[in-house]
Image: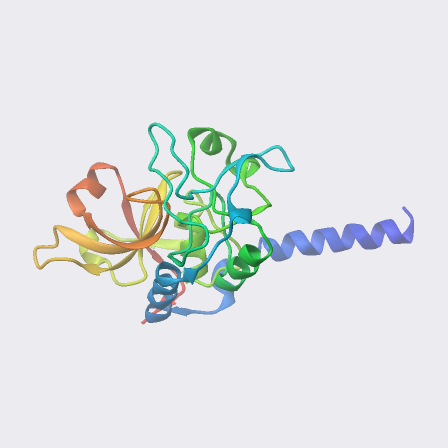
Length: 235
């Protein structure tokens, strides 16, 4: 094998090894820092233009629908953000893992602001992620708040965590995860009876963006959400 080929082969192996490095080796994350970053995503102000609106196939043939005010699709929550106005909250994007600075830069450069979830995207998984869009999805938000080097899916996140015996053990920065479905970042309890909890999420209910929500505990349990704690989170 030519020397140049061996060099690029070693480089490829090194890059893959770096990507697969255990997330828990990147240093601890503090609970307050995880919650504070989620709040930044929820309160982030941005002003899009018409260039950030897109409905159709991107350059790679991937279907993209930005959750702008003009998006309406039966069976889906409608879009919300308005071009030319100040909007609050980073929009949901299937497979999105944008940092706040990456999102800001992407909007300025005319990239698509978000991309809504569909069953077809669930079927295609990573093959349905647009490289022309910016934003963040539910597991991308958790991965950012935990300081992970890449986005870990809802199928992967439990592998980085310890299982909690019950919801009562939850602390700020822990998660409630539904495998291959959705994940929430726990902030605290909404009432003394612990019938509702406060959590950050990126998804469709009630709209396509990062938000802080009050959620029914019985509902989460009925849908099979399990409580997990990142192995490298500290008080």
